[in-house]
Length: 554
RNA sequence: GCGCCUGUAGCUCAGCCGGAUAGAGCAACGGACUUCUAAUCCGUAGGUCGCAGGUUCGAAUCCUGCCAGGCGUACCA
Image (cartoon, rainbow, N blue to C red; front, side, top):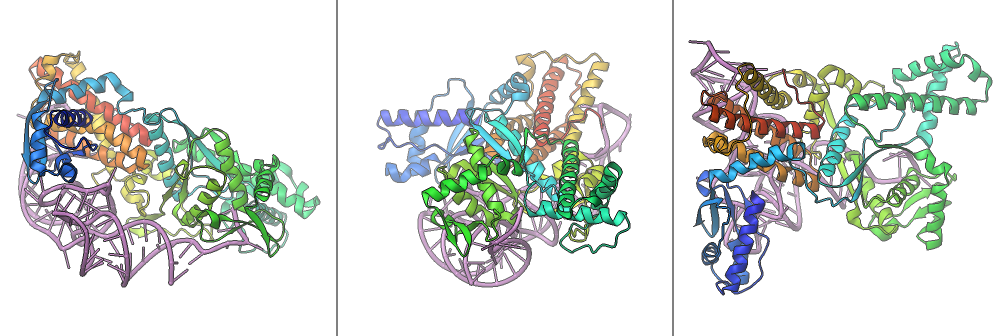
């Protein structure tokens, strides 16, 4: 609707130029918005004020000139006015809003889709937790954000791939192996000293026990190094399998799981480093190999090969991102925990050094989650191995509530996640508020069927009966959806969907409490059923994007 | 020290590519169920948008400085 209006305004301004009512032919893209006050119309534009300096005319005069040349072939505009310092306010015909319902029913689950991505290949990499311990609640937030952003981009015409990067190489994997091996030795009655840097959680003991069940005492006969590495692979695989399971029950499916180790196995890391050597963008200093990231905007250079000959995590990450672009992704989005934000400049530097443009790389930082129970913080010490796992959270509050709550804040705001609140089935807990709309509508439809009052075949005359203010408000909310989708996608801010859905739900509940859908007048009933079915579709579409179910009964 | 994020109603937060009189939920107070699900709705009250300057016809929004909190500042990942 807004888009339609923008077109009308631009062509009116053009016509005004041609007819000489305006001096300059410079016409900016008008900002059209919904005013806060109903008295200011359904839509309002500031175009006249923005054009004032260019046109060397007072804004109100420009506004009048534009209005004079306004054509409205479909008759959607009921009234216009010039107001305040030069706003143009538009009051629309109710019939203009009615067309939205037709759009929704025609587009159905594609309502809100667009082609702004133009089929571009884009990759969203998220969660990517080290396979050294179970997923915790913070990974859940990253998962919800990443998954929803990917869904959004897909709906907006991008060719999206979801990827999980497995850090199955390097020191932390060895530490994992060592931790398991020590617990394993312990099971055989050996005196062990369990170092602080080893993983403390009980899951390590569980893995050691499984290892013992499968392999018996065989590992005790091997060299310690071999045993540790065997433990490492065994444990990493177990943990990874658990993470896959957790993510599946969280509703997150990845298109690809990418192993860091594979970059070493295939020699990719060396190839990249050698290429950098040839180009002279790495250098030796104090026995280490440094990458000149400071030439590409980083505050200082970074080590890629340590004094001891080991590559750093950064080195394989460079190779990994290079690989992404070589796979044909035009844009790459990484979802990281906010504690990694210091890493962005060097990653960006590496990507630019490899010849890619800054706009081809985005990082979504996700702030930490504070886990609470009834307002009291839940201890989350990884060192002691006590943390609330994602699995526990899903089991306790359910996937829908968890996913929805993760998206009730801007991703860069820290989030308090209260387990008690998440379980509550009240207005405190917005997921049920939104889902309730879907269930309520299903219930009305069931009732209509039971009474054989379920004629919903499209009838312009029936739709034309939707004139109550609450009905128009509801349609206006529905009309807003496509723009919410595209703006959430381009800003990569999935929480906008959540807020939108709460708002739409509120408009529906208000309507429901004031007007009866199953009216005695069959025609009005038909119109209203078409209205609420449209609401149901948009609620369902939105919840689906968030990975939240749309129940027909609650 | 430097960098990033955050600061808006008692609480939790939207709004931040500048727009007209500042938004929602919770909590408080008062109302609505013989009707399509009360997991709902309606009403009342609640504000120096951290502080101080600046840009602008217009600033919660942009710029500068300051204050407070969080995070980062590795030859860790």
